[in-house]
Image (cartoon, rainbow, N blue to C red):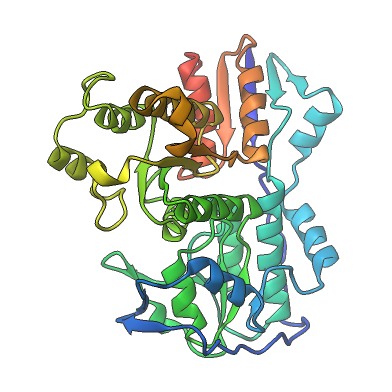
Length: 389
């Protein structure tokens, strides 16, 4: 019998940081040049607000840190103790395969925390060491891994409470520390925090920031961003907040619907009226979105954890649609694409595709049940008919 594992690392329990850590850190000052108005517990963005300029100014302010606090060696040592496994060590030492009794276990060649996740967790650990006595908040789970999130909870890193679907930022006081997770944070959340005179610790994955830069380019060129992602996922919410006009498609079926609408029903007849379009994507479009006006020029972006092949196929479909609608010679005036697929996501998906080519009786993906990465890896096995959990 052969089973295979595609793992994140499962840690044993160990002591966390004590309060005998270095204190300090830069004070926070909000920039007077920002023009905002507040509504309830969140900051409302003016119509002429430039999100890119705001974020650039924020990253240069004294209240902001995205590089850690000089405790990298200590925090990585702690993480290595917590997030290592003797089973994984045995598998790696034996060519990613080992037999225990009658059961052969195979390990994917790419697994575990990617660089962006490791960096995010490490900076969050550093934040508690740097600020041993301050209240520390986090705007979302730092990553979708219950073990890691439990560790931060034990460090007394608290989640911003949510009531009726809205984050209650009024619990955050001047002098508190707020961590932005690896997925990033929406512009209005950053804006609200910048007005509250708090210390911001930004662990956003650089690959996510790369997608933000892409949708900024779309906006500058007056292209609508077609974002391949899940509209309620924290990363996609953040990406959409940096976009101008956008529509979020979860999969190829939704992308085909959009493209069929662009072609007036000549692709596969899946779309229908403008009203039906707006109803279908009512939670996944920018305010005031008009499919008759806003699907003339389109660019592709993605949630970094989506399936690489599907993102590529969606891009090809939109490009082909624009060629059919406006002519091959005019496609560059109606379609633009930049590579925003995360290398680490691609490596793990490629390792999974390689793994499912082998004869397997069972496949286990170890990770957070609500993790997009985890679910897509499991989906690869599912599509091959391999029992998987």
